Length: 169
Image (cartoon, helix red, strand yellow):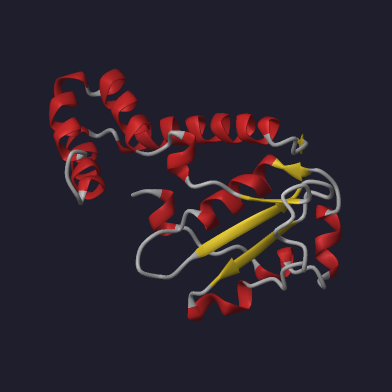
């Protein structure tokens, strides 16, 4: 089961600019906050659009969604949110090579006998459920999650460096 399918929305108070708990975020971002914002922004399905922005200067993260049941998570976005010198939207996982290429890398390394089948899955719609069923049959779900988490952290660290976002911790 992918973290994007089971992700719980972040605690609204933690990221609400008017909340006193936000003061811990008035410095460079932590890897945990960047990862959580990335997962939020990559929530997929028919739930609506999920976006997260990081302030390059403070490390504060602003959340927006049009999903009605999560409206309490919406931060009031700064008026200058479109100023790319100040704010940057967290990327889509595909922009970081964390979609099909990552799955194929995993299959090549850990499921070499199933590589052609995995590649076939990803040549059509509905690939992830088939891939996850294969992982379950092979007892490789935990290995996949560890592989995906490591690759995601590395890609996000590189993205932060590229976008001059200081990571602490």
